[in-house]
Length: 254
Image (cartoon, rainbow, N blue to C red; front, top):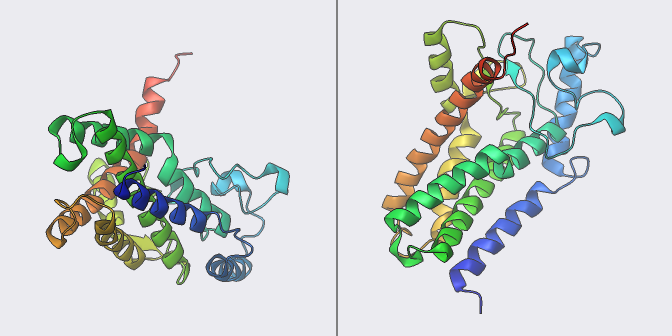
């Protein structure tokens, strides 16, 4: 038989994935933000901007030219004219930030580290314990991302990171920190990321329902919440600096 805890976090993961799979045109929350975004696009007179220059290929073009839902969103520079996130982009953000290669690799590393230290002890220092830890983490990440994307859609909170690009190093570091706790609104201004606060804290306390007894308590949930914000800051730093590192690593001399 499948262990009780395994059934619990598999069910939670499936529930999160079902929420992610809501068609944007039919989901009430996503439809709400789509109508708002279309209104803003018309009032801003930006309907003629090309997808490539705006970095948002979902907003225009034919249905056949739309990127897959598992294709990561293109990096967007903070200096570019702001265009609110679309319903489809919100869906892509949720999926790729849950099962994207970089995020799965991060889960593999943290799960391996926990297995090596045998924490929590209930899972054991073996392959089964590794799978258990990986599943628990993936469930928590999926729940958090669904909550952030869904709740944030109610008032147009944009979960994406916006790169400073070629600015001073100090300014880029400050942007990484700032955007850990703030997010853009439909008018392009930054404001406290309330949906993120709800998602990271709420998902970590909710995960007490399927975590081992030694971790299913308020103290550990608070620590996981702090780790969640630290993880978001690390993700922002990756988004900020990795394109530069990649360009240097794979640059070919003329």
